[in-house]
Image (cartoon, rainbow, N blue to C red; front, top):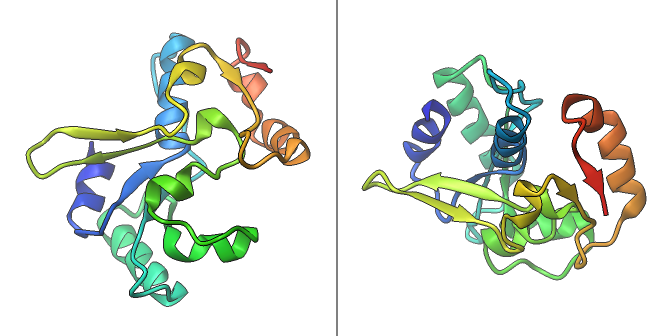
Length: 164
């Protein structure tokens, strides 16, 4: 909740905490872990086509680090990330999230001003809750998925996962 509150205070357009922030929490719960697995980073994604400067992302990241220095923040404006991946321009944060390489990673959550949580899951959450990992059909990169599974030690951390 502290992470959600910190990002909410930035008042970013169309923002979410994405990827492992949600995915890992579900997998930890399903593996009956008493504490959350530490995150490599916390992915903050938003959509602002009026300012696609990497320096703005760095400044936002620095503001978050000042508030919560114990978190490795990674801030990315999805209005520019299509260039990095060689895709057509993304239309929204959800459209950017929908391009990530594994289906269970294509998730995000944000805290609304009224306290509600809004989830973004372009492919649903079924794979997260069934402990399966599938390659994103819109971004087929099996070699990247295999490398990420190994490098991030997913099968060691969550041994009940399986790749489909």
